[in-house]
View (tube, helix red, strand yellow):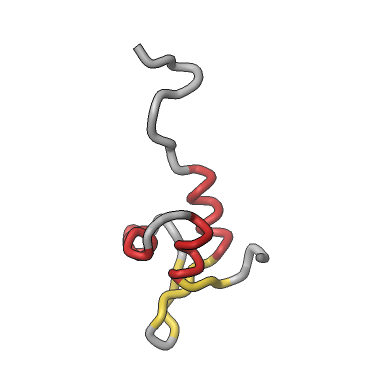
Amino acid sequence: MTDSELITVSEASALSGYTPQHIRLLIRQGSVSGRRAGGIWLIEASSLRTYIDNVPKPGPKPDKPFT
């Protein structure tokens, strides 16, 4: 997959592990770049990759042990 590639919501869901509904929410919030084409949403793969790489992960952080 190239950075400028456009992928469907279902492809983005399969790649990210998020549900299609969550992918659409990310588009509406502006967290992921997408556009509507012919009744379907297309997401920029690079935008999704950037979001996944930068989203805070739940749970204790390595430098802040759970107390």
